[in-house]
Length: 79
Image (cartoon, rainbow, N blue to C red; front, side, top):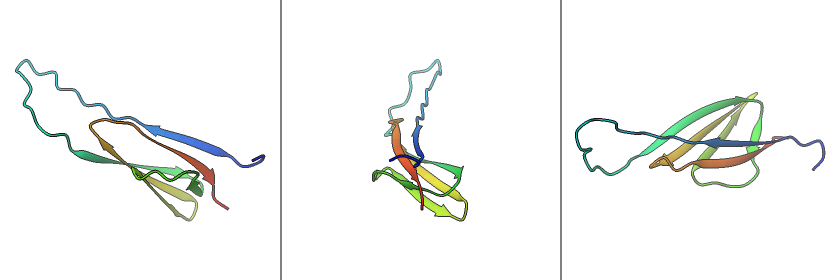
């Protein structure tokens, strides 16, 4: 794939509770992390935890993170 730029994006989210009291036991929730990058990109591989939408010269990525588990996607330049 000469001449075709590839971008790898990895988002990690960590949340720690450093209170002096014992932490409450609660169920983790899925959080969405939105990222906008310059250029028209498309997913090189499908990932159900990342939504990709291109509009004009920008691409929006929405990562769904559960319990701080990283989500990763490889992007290729849209044609």
